[in-house]
Length: 189
Ligand SMILES: [Zn+2]
Image (cartoon, rainbow, N blue to C red; front, side, top):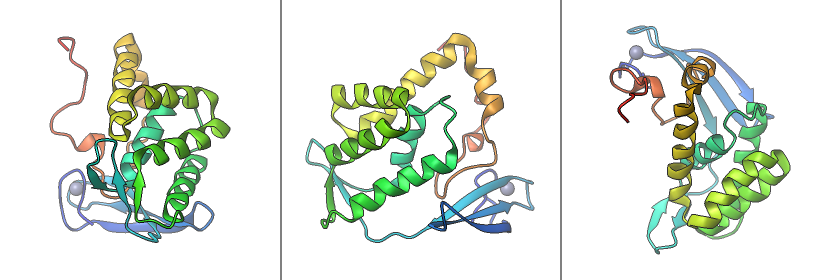
């Protein structure tokens, strides 16, 4: 797998172990070219899903997008990451089990709200308020991202950056560290 930091092709698997109650394999990888470390997850995909947006537009279902929305809603809530991964996998399984290749963005939002309700009330309110106002799955991450940036401007960026698990990314999504140059917030923004 290509290194998310330097795009080197020689990354090596250091360690593989089952996770999420054997529903996934977690692999720790290291890049000999730049020393970068990252983690990938291998999961069963029962079927290819297509998301039908409110506008009627259809896009391939992307687990990473769903995970991003959920992680933003759960930001700073200190919920066990394995539990969150199980929740995400549970939502995906439910979508895959609905018997239709096409799922509507409203169905995904409803499942996420149902799951968050049991997991964390604050994250539930965050997600629900955004979902109900916008009714468009693609807007979740965007707007929740704005909320996160507002928090960052309140002076918590350094603390958040220090706590960020720098070595952990999910398959196919570039790590924040892979962005060119620095990611420090600019005062001019
Ligand atoms: Zn590298």
